[in-house]
Amino acid sequence: PVIYAITPTYARPVQKAELTRLSHTLMLVPNLHWIIIEDAEDPSPLVANLLKNSGIRYTHLTAATPKEWKLKEKESNWKKPRGVLQRNTALQWIRNNLKVDVHRGVIYFADDDNSYSLEVFDEMRDTQMVSVWPVGLAGGLMVEMPVLDPKTGRVKGWNSAWQPQRPFPLDMAGFAINVSHFLKHPEAKFSFNVARGYQESEILRHLTTPDQLEPKADNCTKVYVWHTRTEAPKLQSEKDLNKKGLKSNAGMEV
Ligand code: UGA
Ligand code: MN
Image (cartoon, rainbow, N blue to C red):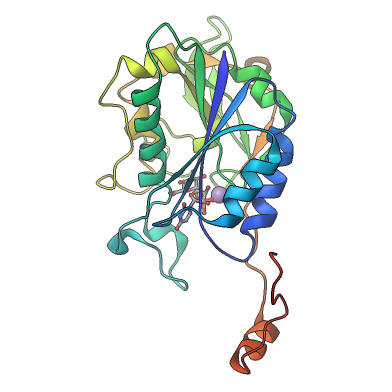
């Protein structure tokens, strides 16, 4: 099966560093197709060149978040969902380009700022419907994860502390979906019209029930992905330069 890794991304000072780090991980994953969706009207040379030079099989899409849903610079990040339109654009590409039982594959939402061990890709590859595993540094915990019934080995609950009443209280990085299974459920997508933290539940409710989930990562005892977030760099001196019409990076891509 091919892993279709779906990555929304947006222009900011750390974008190239994030995408370089992620691409250098994905280069090591066999049989992977990277679907990268820029939150922008037009594709950028930065992303286009990075993809071309990576040698990874890819599809480069764009989908600009409508103004009313775009986070403002100083606005708290939890006020608005991120990546909704971009992930839906990638999912539509999958529906338009892949066929049930012809294209054997797995869908994974790989945000550009997380940290991935190669093992997480091995684990997800044989997903039959929807698989799940622990995510480090997520939901206010060292690890947020499914809790298994020791007798049946199935998911019987979650250890989540943040909004544990959600139908699927897990992070975007903690599950994968079989492509054929996904194609059979045309309603499965993300939505701006759900409460915060409910994006994962919104797509998964169309695709599975908690007891059907396939636990991975050694019965959910291993952490192979971390919900890391990159601090925005302090660029005051750069702003001072800009006021004088200067840039430290004139003619350089950073
Ligand atoms: C958490 C989850 O890990 C995300 O999967 C979820 O989308 C997000 O919350 C949410 O509540 O919407 P967090 O680290 O806070 O993640 O979100 P980001 O990593 O900042 O954004 C998720 C993805 O969307 C990233 O790949 C990012 O590059 C992209 N993004 C972010 C955009 O495309 N446009 C934006 O304006 C912001
Ligand atoms: Mn993130």
